[in-house]
Image (tube, rainbow, N blue to C red; front, side):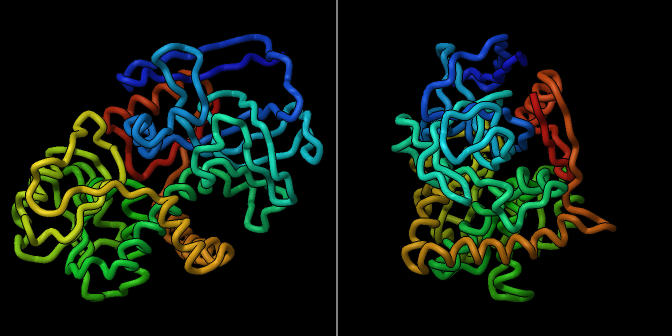
Length: 368
């Protein structure tokens, strides 16, 4: 019997972590499957899941039995270790939303060729986007050798695509510049890539990235921003330019600086992430528009209604293929995959992310 491990986090202090081990698996209930989590991506996006765990219900997907602790969700690949569900066989591989654990018990419903939905009662009120598990053998785009890129970037890129689509759907709020914080993060440069694809060169809306001094060189080399500056250079931007702020960092100080610098010239303030999780704060009393939380599933639902359910995945797939070219460029790839196994490897990467010490070129794929 293999050892089961769970990496859990103190919900009110993301720096406090534990690894819980058990030797025996409890009996598998009827109508459920036990998945062995083979590998998962760990990025700053997962820190955002923890930072917004209560507000956005991220803690609710995989309840934790240890009081005060939670299980941060991750995207990855798992194989069926045991099954009490017709149509799902032991050994099958599925891509989806898992806890940072060696195992997960799911309750499949709507089982079909393409996969299933986890119909566990505690997940039924959570957004369907996170409850779908894709059967790898039925996915025409699946490549075993591309699993790392899929786990690391596909969920983030879907958010990037939807942010760009949301801004375009609203005419970029009649702005002349879109400013993205945490510009070296994968979600930010995915958004900038989608905007660049849409707008082309000199498209009338300038794409500006904000990042830390240590990440300036990398972020500029991506080539998808018109301008990249350090956080302490915000005051040098033209204050009267109609602008949109896309907040990937969650930093209250950066938000304060942007709002006070642009004032009424700031047409929209979009809150997406919390990479600077220790600097989170509200947006009350700021000049300009009230910061508004962006919820990707809501824009996805709107587009499925506008376009029909099949059109959105198709458009994302086309954009994804274009994005993969610079990501996997042989001469200067945007992403270098680094793998790790075991609790120490997971904790090391987690703490680097918590402290903002990760190399933006690296993408970490891990297993417990």
